[in-house]
Image (tube, rainbow, N blue to C red; front, top):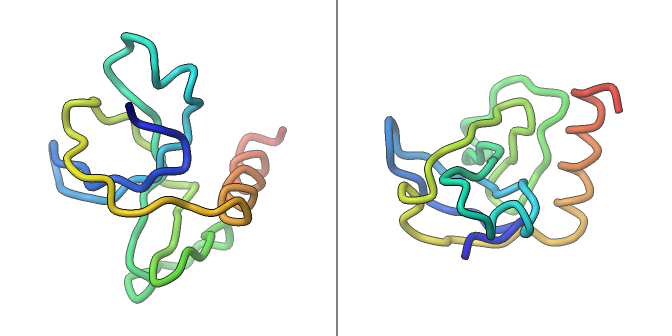
Length: 97
């Protein structure tokens, strides 16, 4: 099962890395998608005040997508609590919550 906080390599329309941000309850349903924030190498960071650093990568909470579960090919990392709190904060700012 795909779990919130995991970083996966995703195929599909284009290969990319995505941090799973949808809840484990949602991810465990028969819904064929999960919600992810794109993850890019820190060197490829474009200007984004909401970017959250994660080792040599950066999570982009302003780049959300909902790829099909079948496109997830490999779990490559997992975010720590501080990273997930930073992502949650950025998502709240984006949505004015």
